[in-house]
Length: 455
Ligand SMILES: *Cc1c(COP(=O)(O)O)cnc(C)c1O
Image 1 (cartoon, helix red, strand yellow):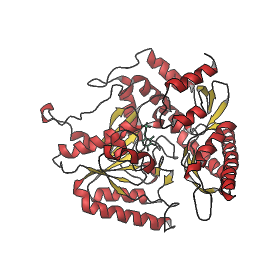
Image 2 (cartoon, protein in one colour):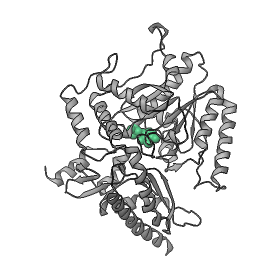
Image 3 (cartoon, rainbow, N blue to C red):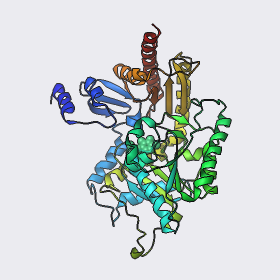
């Protein structure tokens, strides 16, 4: 089919996620293929995948091993249900996940996206307390600017104003504690002080409400969609300690951070945090197929294990739960980590990125560069000194990424924070090229919008 026709049809029939379609129609993009860290559109133009195809891709596109594993599984069976029956790749993958994850986690409940893995975590925690005779523990506590996915349960523990405000009356109510946001803190600038104050405020809430609280949801070490905000050292461990002290289940969301993205297999390892429930998705299949999982402890599992008539069954499941093709892709993905010693190799790339980003720090409109492993956020401001943001309506972040697209690299911003999250497989030359495109786009776009405001 010719290219113009495809674009016309994409505008005619599609409704894209998290996209103002009026923007899309103004600048349509149709991807046809990919290879390594490159994506190619229907016109043959190539783009560096600067956001790992939305924080998923690990070893690049069309990885031979993952492709082969999927094809091999396809010749056996594509899918059979996990409701009341298991299958071979789902068993083998569960074993691998338990092997790789923190010690306390012993059971794997599959689903198909980050949001569903969080829904499951919430329902699991909620029912756990009922099953052990503490039905008054029904509430959840979360952090300001938290993001856990877009289904109604997941947005009920989500606190990014711009996404979540619209659906307020649809959601169940959650308690909110402040996030120790160092760059944006209104009156403190010392990270330790901010950490201590936030932990204090969290404890005040827990002291008052702990007997009603089932669990606390928290993104592992860094808030992603909330702006790439990294917790100060010791905060995460402090949250764990408070959850223990007040008998609240710690639900850690590793959807974005899992599988090496932060330089450890899971971000909890940075502070030795042991979740009661942990959600994983995005990188689990190397970015190839929709598999997610909610991992939990034997203690929680056992609270559901009884005669059917006790009605303690976990009443949750999705049609494609435990999909064989996806689990086979995930197994192949994890095999590459092991053979290539990938987590170890990632350390070098992390420091390469750190060095490449250094010059950008000096840029008059780069307010902050936040990096945790292979996850980076570059926040653009109109005034570096006062940290004053650009006018919201100018959409400087969005326009910067459009300029990057023109220059041959794809990513999506969070407000005026440019997300830079290359696949773990990106080599030094590719990383250099990505940072160079990003720097040029930042220079051109910020100049334009800052200049316009000055006159
Ligand atoms: C992306 C993300 C989710 C949602 O995952 P989906 O697969 O998009 O539903 C949940 N939590 C975090 C931290 C995420 O980054």
